[in-house]
Amino acid sequence: MSNRILKKIDIIILAFLLAVTFLIGSYRLLQSPPVWYDEGLLMQVSENIAKYGEAVIQQSPDIHVSAGFISTGTPFLYPLAGAFKLFGIGLLEARSFMVFVMMLFVSIFYLSALKFFGRKQAVLTTLLLVFFSSFYGNGKNVLGEIPGLLFLFLSLFFLYKLEKNNFGEEKYLFLAGIFSGLTASIKPIFLPFLPAIFLGFIISKRLDKKYIFKIIRFFIYGMIPILIWLKTQFGAEDTLPTILKFYSNPYYIPFKEMMLNVFDNFLRFFKEFSPIYFMAFFIIWIVGGLLSIKKKIKISIAEKIAFIFVLFILVAYLRTLGWYRYFFPAHIVVLFFAPRYIKNIADTFFRKYTYIIVAFIYVALFSLGIYQIGWGSWLAKQYNNTKTDEFQNYFSNNDLGDKSILLYNVPEAVVFLKTSNYYQYMLVQPEITRGASNLRLVENGLIDYILISNSDLSIFSPDTKYYKKKADIQRYSLFEHL
Image 1 (tube, rainbow, N blue to C red):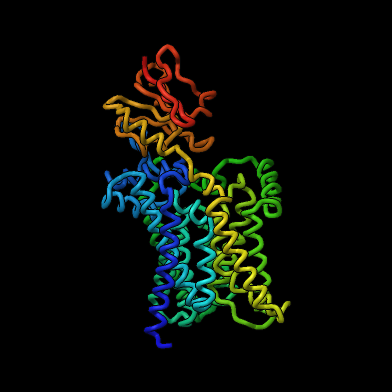
Image 2 (cartoon, helix red, strand yellow):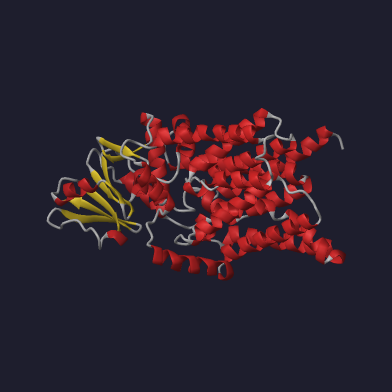
């Protein structure tokens, strides 16, 4: 076939993949997943960037504090702020932006797979992505994982192009460096990408005299977005030791408890669906890679870097509280590189039945993916969630006017308020709080309303001398000044 026809085929395939992504991603967009804590923080920062040009959080109507305590960087927050300036500020606009980012990521994923593996495998691999429920569970929320993966895959793509040109094209060196820096600065979970690149260069013997100055330039290019991130996100009150301590152990887990987490999280890969699904593909990737080495088939630098990055993520995940989101980026990377080895493994061990086995595996995986999206996943169980509707309806029908309200550790509620006269107390982590002085205003009855999660009422309950409960909104209580 001519190149023109092949390009048309690719356009048709990509259009289909994007249509599937849009339909699944936009279904029950505001309800599933429900709005939650981190999403509220990130939307607040982006809103303030759009309004004031600074990455800050409103602590009170006249006090804004640095956003350095949140774990998502300005390479994501500024584009979202740009969307707010263009289309307005709200949950619909924010999540529509996330659907757009998901579609953009699917495009890069497919086009990268075309370069790495060829058309047939690119289609199969990308179909696994668009029928992967966690892609939407983590992608529809206003979070940094999918944008970070977008930058990561762009970096891998240009690293692949760079190797194909024997490191001869400066533009690929520049683009790979820039996108690697954007990847590392978007979330702490992506920080290991830079050392993974360095180790990948070492393993591929690219640090000799022939390449060393190009590698140095690569890392200089990578530092550009990192320096911009440090300049735009962190204020004078954010010290480097505090930031590093937060990034290295964001939940401030004691060492003994961390060791228990390592054991519990390790067991998850043998008894829970998402970790088992990940581990199955990871083992396929390892076996396929070993077979390639045995057959002396060259493995690209980009793939080596990706594999090292996944190992780093797994080690980091083991010490956490165990939420699947902490190894989600690794899962997407594995989902990209592992499937192409299914046929190679079947060829090696079951040559006579290769096509039957491969066809059965893919049909089973696609069926499982569709079932998870429609019925079996956490995402699907949230389709009938009413949290967003109840919040929107309440604050639409009960305008607070100019009266003040304290949000007690519920930053997600700002999304629904129709007033800027709000105060916040945020217990981000045990050692990170903001707005503690606002609690004294409540203790003296100087705030008109208080919104608090029912789970926090045992920690902080408004004094009945000043306040009475006005309404229950989902799992939240709204108190009104007497």
